Image (tube, rainbow, N blue to C red):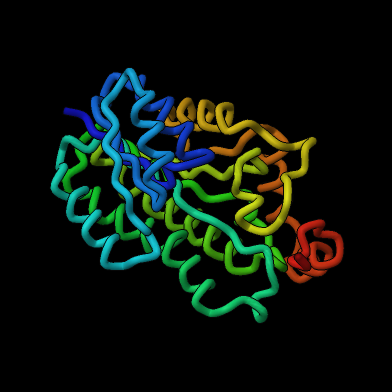
Length: 255
């Protein structure tokens, strides 16, 4: 039996990963992981190409993550796909954000991702796949999203370093760096709505990511504008980009 695990499966990109992975010929069962059980159950009930298993887990809870990690490790070679999609941002000044909120953000965006990857890898065999969802924000210093941009930069560098380690085993790893996507992410972050001219739908973003996963690349960016964004970010000194973003960022954490 082939198993796929998708975190953040109650909304946004997670829902689309579940819907599209159900048609993967190696996937018979999809484990849906997120805090909110009701939307995941509704999604599991609509699946026709694979069986949905709902696992309500708060990824900010270290004990709950350990239980989930043990279940993932127990899947062994049956685990064919791991999608570490769960994550959220806080659009606010760092110094004005309760430390508990900041640490929870790191727990979900970084700690859980690393722990579940570590749990999955020992049993994964040739052809298994890992998707780590980062963000195009990772390429820039981002005032008012300071901790989120740093967390996603960690995911990018972790993925870039880990992907070559897995090549000899035949396990593919893809780091997905979305630009703005029309999901509830923006409302949760307190940033309102994404910029409309460069936004992708979740369906299109996931379809593109899964196509890239079938290839040899380690990084997936949604379209030329975001490839250019990544290249341009390497040519601008960070002290300049941080200052410019500080003054012209429309999401300035004032709400």
